[in-house]
Image (tube, rainbow, N blue to C red):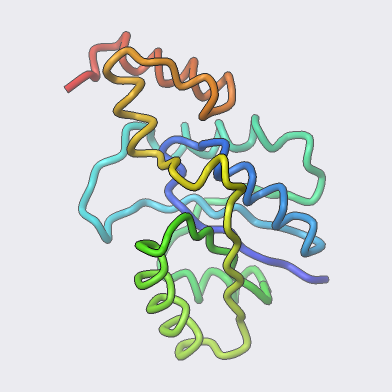
Amino acid sequence: MRRAIYPGSFDPTTNGHLDVIERASHLCDELIVAVAINDQKHKTTLFTIEERIGLLEEVCSGKSNVRIAHLRGLLVDFARKMEAQAIVRGLRAVSDFEFEFQMALMNRKMEPAIETIFLMPKEDYTYLSSRIVKEISRLGGSVAEFVPPMVEKALQQKWDQGLTD
């Protein structure tokens, strides 16, 4: 079985993420979308790990070969445990490339049997990031064209709960 992992914080899931999930799911028998806690950048997330996993499970429910999992620890260790042959990473712009390239080389050093596949999103999503979506939503703008409806609703609920600052 060809298995790949698409890791990320998905805080929140955007249409750009879904574009990569859709296209990556056609390249393998099973795609594991691995939701991570992003402690590398020392930033807190708006959504809990459970909320992010739940939203992804909901938006990916129609994709029979996509599974959502909680990523703990090193990605290459998780990939070994899941018996994955590849890691999928999305590249939006040249600015993403340097970091992603370094990570891919380090992952290859730690586990040569696991390849990294870079996918560029559709042109419509090259500017899209979770950070920008959260900011637009927090300031009262519509994010309907950037995220699935259930994510838009979840964002609004967060702001209604007083999490605006």
